[in-house]
Image (cartoon, rainbow, N blue to C red; front, side):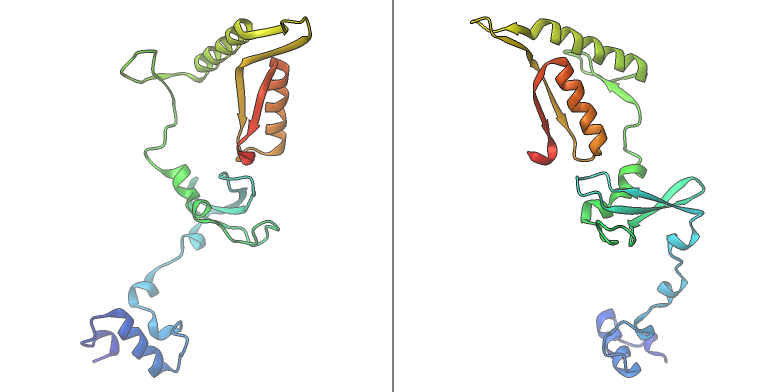
Length: 193
């Protein structure tokens, strides 16, 4: 009877004994591998291609390798060539695959009308027009040219903007420019909050 079929039901004990018998004091050698493990093939080996990317969660910008098979993301891992993270990812970065492959992820524009109880799907063009109309109306209603003493203000306190840490510098720069052009003074970035 081999060691794998012994009476030892607890895998840790079985692996410890197998390691000692094999002379593997670290307990990481072939003696502690199971048959099931030996039959497995890593998803990274079966991928059709690997695409370099950047983690979308925070402002650090850790490098990622996205493994794609049949045009589907099968694995996302840290990029060892990244000077930022050198192949490491935090728990959120390591779970990035769930962000893009979760079946519960919304992929349509959803809208609930004021006092409405149900959500409805909108096409992107309609949603963008609604947002633009509301921004223009808010600016028109809240724009202040001068204060009580006649000093020039040219601002609106009815619009605030918040840039995200998942955006790159260029995107945040454009958000700042748009906010300033609208007259907003309440412009902030998630990374500073």
